[in-house]
Length: 209
Image (tube, rainbow, N blue to C red):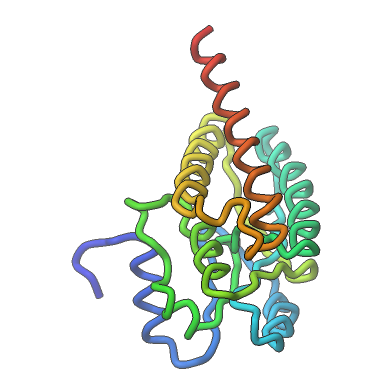
C-alpha cells in the first residue's frame, strides 16, 4: 500500500518483486486478454534465450470513425510485428499483454518511471536485448484493447508515444549499427530513426503554416 500513487512502472516493479512464480504478465487497465492467450505465449519460454513475449492487439468493439481508423492501424501493426518477429527485431513488448521472465525482469531493473520515459514497455525491450535476451511475438495470443474514442485524444496519445519512442531510441543509440544486435541494430534502428525524423519535419512544417 502506498499513500501516494507513483504510476504503473512503480506498481508493477513492486509486484514483480513479490511474485512467487517464474513468469509475470503485464496487462494494461484498458485491455482484455482472451482466456487462452497465456497458453499460446508460454511455449516460447522453452527457449532459455527468450526474455519476454508480446501479443497480438485487437480493437475492442470499434464504433467511432477514430476507433475504426485505429482498428485498421492495429491490423497493419500486427502484420509488421509478425515481420519483425521473423527478423528477430521486435522492439516493443506491448502494454496490453506481455509476459516476462521474472528473474530477468528484476535483474535489469524492471520498468523505468514515467519521468524518464512515457513508453516503458518499449524501453525495456532495449535493455532485454542488451542483456542478451530475445523478445518474441505470438501471432495466436490475442488481447482486446480499448482505444481513443476521439481524434483529439488519439492525437495526444500519439504525441506521447512518439515522444517516448524518441527518448528510448536516443537513450539506446549505442545499439544503432552495432552488428552485435544483428538485423535489429543494423537495419531496424536506423529505419525507425529516419521515420521519426520525417514525422518531425512534417509536424514542424504543418505547425509553421
